Image 1: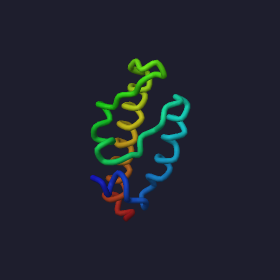
Image 2: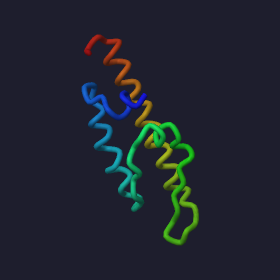
Image 3: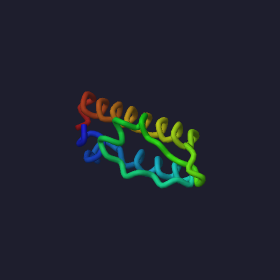
Image 4: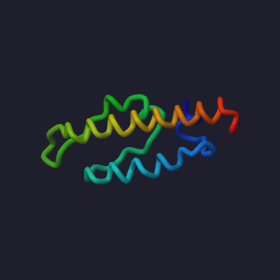
Length: 86
């Protein structure tokens, strides 16, 4: 999993990794460094507002961004491997 999500650069994941932080930076929150744990546990991420209250909008956006990132990378990797482009 780690190699597919974080290390393999041959099937085009770099584009996805460049776009995700650009979308996230609009929240004003710091994007956690991606790891296998962050990707697999994105539904458990918690973010707080400047007043210390839960930032549900940021939590939902993070969950959507990271889950879609993982899904898209998985599909690209499968297509790349199965399609014999590797």
